[in-house]
View 1 (cartoon, helix red, strand yellow):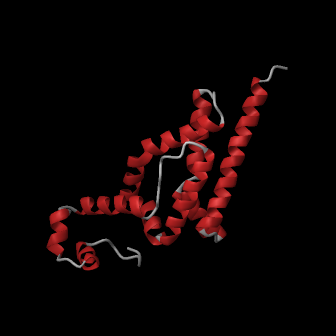
View 2: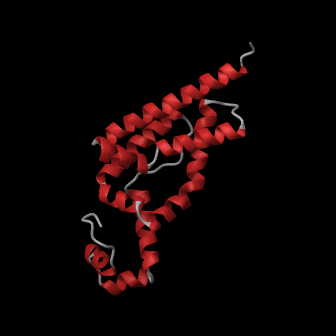
View 3: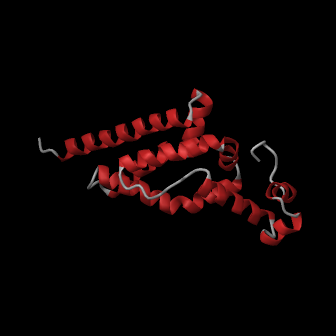
Length: 172
């Protein structure tokens, strides 16, 4: 897949140095094989970490992830544009959403439910493999450069929300 080839049992067996039947034994169906691959990519190449609870931790996580995306760009792009990759990302969504909501709560405590949701969703749009891909393809940025742009966007967004909510809470 790094070379743009299709994922096959034969290719996996050759890459692993085992017989094809061994791969079938571990992954009886093609969807199981694909799901295992995408899960492995998510854990081992993207360095995705859902533990950040503040913007500094999130910025560090972005740098690690985008660096990993650069190192495995063809696989990450395949994951972005496949049904199996979408399924993996959907499976990660509860933890991802919890992370973004925690970052929003830390940066701008006391937002109402709708504002909190919109802010968390905006953070997720910014910190995504899709944003990395856009900056890579249209702006020819490295993962490090893209991470700097995204960090700027995250911090600006949260500062803007803080300013807006502070203004709204200040009596005239």
